[in-house]
Length: 224
Image 1 (cartoon, rainbow, N blue to C red):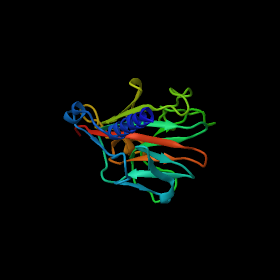
Image 2 (cartoon, rainbow, N blue to C red; image 1 turned 30 degrees about the vertical axis):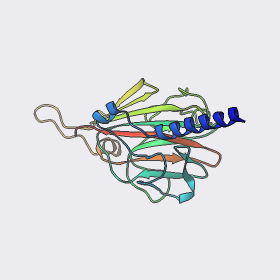
Image 3 (cartoon, rainbow, N blue to C red; image 1 turned 180 degrees about the vertical axis):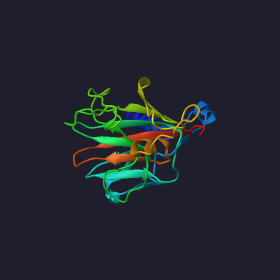
């Protein structure tokens, strides 16, 4: 009995330590300007656009289930920034991590950029893709496996890393200032408007049967 009690106590201490570790920044990250936008316990600061039932917090993670829904971080909009998030998706699941999006009451976001989350869904565009712009057809992770997204938005560049590996830097040549004497300003298009605007971070719940999880969501602002 004493052994069992000691084992249960040890497991309880381990579980508590793991719970405390969720959404905690290292001292080095804090000094570097990183902040947490998810407290690991509640959805404070986050707002779903198609009903409150689609997202909940379990075991230190935001869990998306049910039909289409998008969870926006509404406390702040970001222009130039870095974003890190740990993500997990189930078999046949589909999701997305949005940046620079404007709030919408319903439907699929029509502004900003979607970073795809998909390891085995029939959609051929897999995790790491910049949806409708950069297409990756082989997922860099497995079903039900945690991986880390690291996204950097700076000027007219958007850089994507997965698990510390650089995948690509998307550069919108049309955005920014005209070059040289007499240069003409680039035409305003939906795409270069998106890359230069401030917007919200949003998490996607895609369809019934899809289960996606997000934890350790950190943001660092960069100079404009």
